[in-house]
Length: 258
Length: 362
Image (tube, rainbow over all chains, first blue to last red; front, side, top):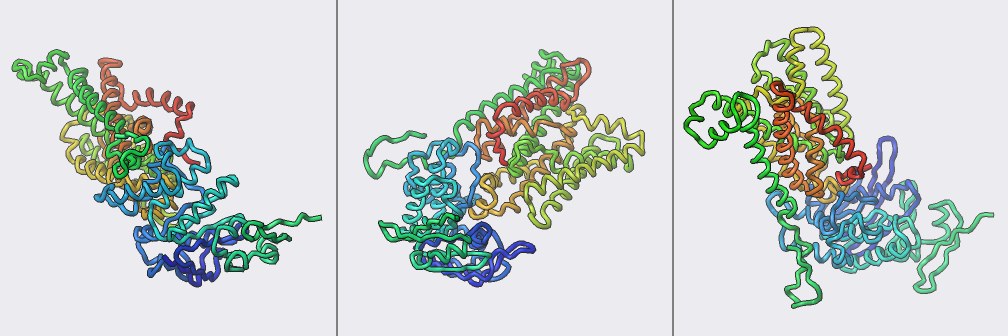
């Protein structure tokens, strides 16, 4: 499903976090939003996720304005993995993933075959099937993040939003999660994620959106967008941009001062 | 039915049953059945022992329909008019407080939340005092009505405050509004009490929660309120469970956290208001019963509610039984007994790391 942000402005009393952002994400693409802390990238993601009401502008998911949809209808189109999600204590992995089916259930519409199927596929896709009966709080950080992804996938939305899905993970698990994100997009879903690490954003996203002070500074395929000037503008540091020998994707190496 | 299939047996039929939620959580079912049986036995004991002049044997004969026992007015009085109403009230109050405590802890994500949090108890106290002082209330039934009205009104004000303005319906607002208004009501109660001496004695007795002197007919007007409260509670089980994921996740799963909180707090008001109207403020029960329930039910809200209600009802019957016999022929109010049991238990919980199973979050 196509996701479009038009002239979006959002903020808090006395502070505008996002100013007039336009963004268009075709179905099946992975977009990474990068930028320094406090640049408005999380607010932008929250506005897309229908969690933060923009003061002006619109977010369209497919043919509908997200903010015109009912909460439940929006939950059929857009799923979100927050930055540090809270787990109910003592919940099992299967129990967690089942939460993803809430938008499809009602007071009288109980667990169905489709729910069962969706949960099983989500566990399968994230390689968490063996963990299903385990308690979430007894898993490692990397395993846990895969389970959270499984919950989001079980929601079976065409659009998936991820807020720093790799922030608490070591390199190996971060790569694992990002590979998973690519698979999710390959299966036809649209993914927008906020990332801190420019290098992994460049490698795993089709498009990079670089933000600073609430505005989009650069927007395009990672190989064209990421250069020394952008890094300087975003983070205020000098950096060498190398090309990875494998696939030529940009690698940012900050220059030591002095 | 959790048989994990090992290896790839016949393709189409290897459905991993792990992903199917068991319709009813098995340990919960067993615990609920055991508790229900226990509750029946306790209720029976409660009809046989204490208050009123009748020996256990005579009361037993009466229940079995022995003609001579049936004809004995003293036994009939003890069993039917004294013990039966108390037993019914203990079950009702227990169920109310158990369920209300469970709801409130889930909705505030605070394992130490208590039913008094919404200002129900302080509002009920104010209602009783106003009724006693300005409206010449003299019957227990009239006091019950004043307590109910006071509790509901107080809770409504707290909810209105918590549900308005920025961050509407957040747990913090609920707690703040509850404790602020609770203090206000408390102050008003003290003011009225200080200005009129005569009210004080009656009030002092009311404020120590007790089941003595209740008549079965007192409970009738509360039954619909309790029924609605319980229905809403069980109906909210799923969205309430999603709140445990945090507001952002709950909303992106299609729920309305603010709305859920207000509806659930409404149910808490009905339940806790009914309980306080029947028995006065009874502490600890709404705190401990959900905690005990969670050790079996885990995070499942529906199971928690069921077990918590059963546990609380059982504990209250036991406390009421003890209340009758501890310093015979006088009575100790149940709330005093519960405080004696509850205090040490609370310390024990705080000292073990069991807080986390309650879903405590930073």
